[in-house]
Length: 244
Length: 311
Image 1 (tube, rainbow over the protein chains, first blue to last red):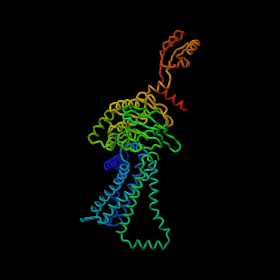
Image 2 (tube, chains in turn orange, brown):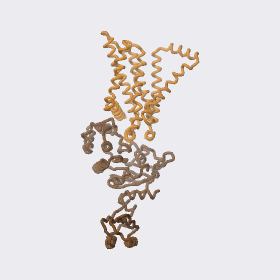
Image 3 (spheres, each protein chain N blue to C red):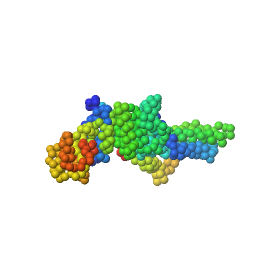
């Protein structure tokens, strides 16, 4: 199955990166993105770009943005371009198709994030290093790698789930936005909580150490990813994919 | 299922809510032939292909393709079959070579075999020189040819072609038909071809089945269907056909019916028989005969008759 997944990943990335005609194959968009997060923002933030724990938040959002831009196309795009049924009529297994497409979007989002992280490190050292080697603290560096991967996976799993049942890419994108908004509804409800609850929450958060918080976030993401991937696997039915 | 049959269905039925797209279809397709599956739009041809490829579950009945049950062994069926479905299914952002390279990997063809097979197919279909081009820029005929190459890439035993020449201009359609017939023969394939182009079916198919509203109306060789489905005819073009001649012709035992229109007499015969006595009669009556055609019903005539009868 790994070989089949690899086949799908290669095709997906090839379609994404080497399509000719559209802004020279999508490379312009990628270069713009890497320039912003690998050069412009490190220049604006100075040495804090690698030292501050806020970096974790940046690098958690970057793969989300990247993956959400491509994942809606995974099934809805093939359906719209009339290539899905031919793919389903091939000998590839359900899981190879599903996990291959998921892996491709994760690889794209997380891979570009890692390239931007490394480029940002180089930029910071070249401009602000003054002969000293500036590196991410180990825990932050590790957190960036793990969090960005988990967010890329979350975005991909959610996007695939939506794309499986969407007739068009546009519909998939709209549903994906709504689905992600629903995930964050609890945050929007916080201001409506009773004052005493809010105070207790603030005391709880103030007493938390950031490591524990990071571990909690990672655990929540892992659970969410497992649930969404399992759901996507169970929803993958060839007959249902043809008629949407 | 007998070993000589590539496909066998028994009461195959598929409902979509209240619509019965495929209605108790029972037929057999012998191995190594081009089998035409004929029917008007919406008659259930595409649904039948989807059922045979295991992409849809039947509501009732069962079918076997290459000895595998379509409900429980669809993976094995897809492993050994190729298909051009309603659409060519090419990745139009990729080049022709990339499309075949991708499907070559899908079918686990080794790198060296993949390269030589791609070259062989593209060369045969006159597409080798254009292999690096993005297929989105190609004509419909070229795309269908490439889709055909993709279908044959892994040397399948059976291919399903769902109206492969639909939408092509006559020249492109003829070229694709020629390629199809040539390569099917060369590769020893069984071809399941759906079409509503009856002339195409007549040229390509050794066996045909006619369906309407999911029901099988007739099955057999085109020759058999022509014989069973419609009577032989004698067409005489000319002028000065007298009333006495028409009366005499109608009275002949060979004649089933006679129609006169402008400068033509169409005599439907009761059975295949010698027609020279009738022609002699017309000439001796003083009619000016320009052309005499002894014709059998075409597949199109049979098809139209079947459609009319089913109504």
